[in-house]
Length: 197
Image (cartoon, rainbow, N blue to C red; front, side, top):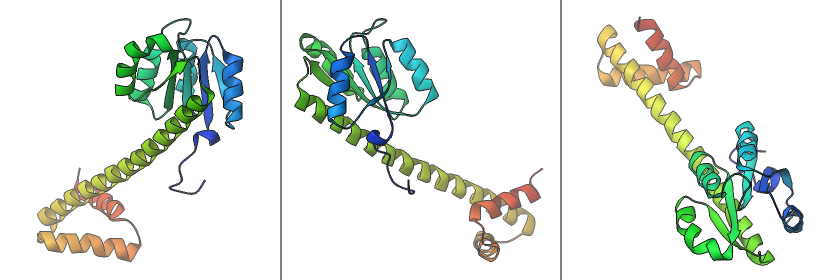
């Protein structure tokens, strides 16, 4: 996959957390071109599988054998970039909908309408792709901020040890980076190593 491209859920694994109704969900997913990479009956097993990584979407058919499923769904949206779909009985929607959606969980009522289920899964996939883009952009910003911190520390050391102005220190770092065809961060690290004990 080329840099900057977003991994589609259809290209990554789907974890189905489901004690009952496995075959119907497998058929619905198959009709959408998706297949669960793994099927587990409990939240505990789901957590173990998710710790290994590699899942782009988690579909939870509540209730589970060891918990309601809402706890797992909310935990996943808080600590991962997985798309999370929670399937609950229609009569429980009023109680579960607000806390689930506030946490970023997509909720669908059972019995499942195939078209609504497909739309929910597609919306979950789109949301995950958006989160991945934001996460990558956030990482770039963190790297840029770290580079700025390194350059500023290196400039301070040049000012202190070489008795130059800030502008001269800045130009010296820029010139060294250009001449050596290295990033300003690498040049700054070399300066820090030279002057810091």
